[in-house]
Amino acid sequence: MASRSALNHLRSRRAFDSKHTAATIAATKRTLFCSQQPPQHPWHSGLKKGDKVYIGMSGGVDSSVAAHLLKSHGLDVEAVFMRNWDTRDEYNECPSERDWRDVQRVCQQLEIKCHEVNLVKEYWNSVFSVALDEYSNGLTPNPDVLCNREIKFGVLLEHIGRRRSSPGGWRFATGHYARTCPLGCLYRGIDGRKDQSYYLANVSAQALGRVVFPLGGLRKVEDVRRIAAEATLLTANKEESMGICFVGERRRFDKFLAEYLPQNPGDILSSDGKRLGTHQGMFTKTIGQSAGIAGWQEKWYVYKKDVRNNRMFAVQGRNSPLLHKSSVVAGPVHWISGHMPDLGLRGCIDLDVQIRYMQKPQRCRVSMACEFDNRDIKQQYVKVDFDDPQFGVASGQYLALYSSDHCLGSAVIH
Image (cartoon, rainbow, N blue to C red; front, side, top):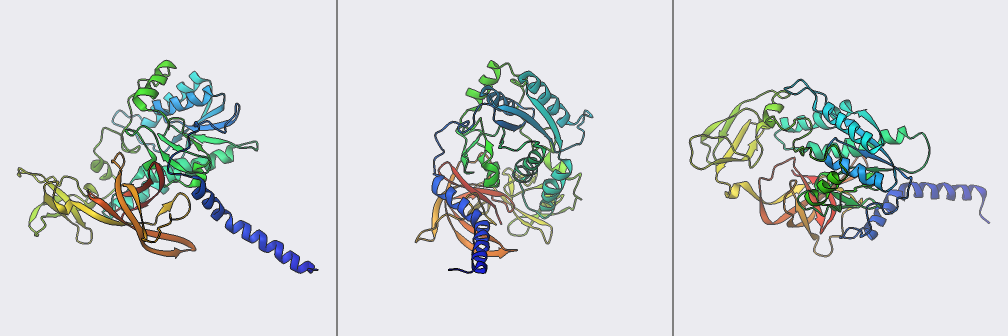
């Protein structure tokens, strides 16, 4: 018969193992049950009448229709509006104030509660300042990917959790064109012109498991606009916002960044070292962008940055091999499942990749480049070999990896 101390040791050992293997078990479940194709059940599967759903609303038609669909299914809906930016435009009005008014009007129309959350400080610290630092070092970050990971599906979900006065489950919804499942898998939205899974590829599986995307199975023009009109939503005819949230649509991005980063003029050189012109700072142009060299019949494009010597290099014509890359190294990789897919005997796996939003999926082979532990967190870097050389690949960009419609994760290009 085992002694009491031995039994206590066994219980504590089991508790330790249970705690430290929970993440592994969750990752295994996602691997086993998240297939290449999205689940065929509707977005509201598993939700019943009266269930609490918070929806992040932006003041646009997409989140308005998503809120309408949630309410139409008898759910207890409450809207949350994030204020991430707080500067005035040329009309001395903050665009977020206009959007907040639209959210309030739509919520009044739908007879649902709404409240505003001020996340300006969190956005500045976790998104904008990070992006500024990367721009100043000649990189090309994606603030929208950072915002989804750190703010909308990070800090905002924590805020909602603290706000809950009663125990019980709740879900979170947005107007994104993507699909997910309760296990936290991520899939493309069916509208190829609007699919936003690229922007969500760095969000954790834990967050995605709480999320519903009512628009994931709809098309913007054919379905969402029609639903908005039929429901007479006040935002039915509102124009779509396409700019980065803190820049807006009326301003040039490099001019905006110049308000926060010091200009540091340097030379633009040809591949053989001839001086072509001057740039105003490493942040003003990205790889594949026009170099702005006047007086030539054929355009010059930036293909390389020498940050240490504050120089850019340009080449004529978009078809130049210097503007195309056959492979990249990216990492650390955020695998939504929690671990890398099996590479098999070949040591690589064939996948689809996107290096920017709205890009047509590109075939590639993914293999391990290196792996190391950083503060007890395993970080993996992968080598991505493109079937077809890719134009304008810039360090700092996010690439997203897919198996058919199933988004596996993302990584930063180096």
